[in-house]
Amino acid sequence: MTSSTEITRQDLLLLSLLELGGATKSVDTEDLAIKAHELLPSAFAWKKYPEQVNLELVRVNLSNFKKPSHGTLVRGSGREGWRFTEEGIRQAVLLKKSLVGSELGVGLGSAGSVDTVRHSRELKRLMTSQVYRDWVAGSDVSDAGITDLLKMNHYTPASIVEIKLVRLREVVTTRPELEPFIDFLRSRMEMIFDEQ
Image (cartoon, rainbow, N blue to C red):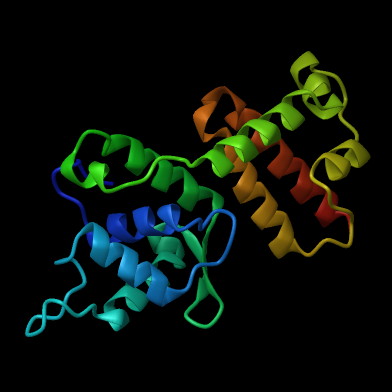
């Protein structure tokens, strides 16, 4: 991650994916390219035709984000679209916070009313759950309680488990004290699915 005065192409794509809802849905490469171009027109522009977006450059950078050497920040492809991993959403939110008050930060939206309502509803659901109360108290937490809280069962595909955990990670970005709870849920889900 860079300072707010020097943003990289990679940072720009993380911000674009965040702005387009990459924590809750897959986002098309073309939509990401247009959003990145709106935020910083020169980043992915052609040399001879600067008003044009170099879609291949966008796709290559997104593909690099899938690699462990780049932190495995996204999942997806040009065909299915792109969405965040847990680490990707964490980095994107931190990057956006670091840009508040900068020239680029002005072009970034704030959470809309639908997102705000969804986040507060999900936070309330998490924090009033028996699983959370048991976790805070240091009591045993049942597998059934966790799968019920996450609205999953033993037949839920691993890809759906990850999507749900990324969404939860996004919701708790405003409440860093809940990060350990999400880490706990992740580790328990891994144990539950390893037993299958």
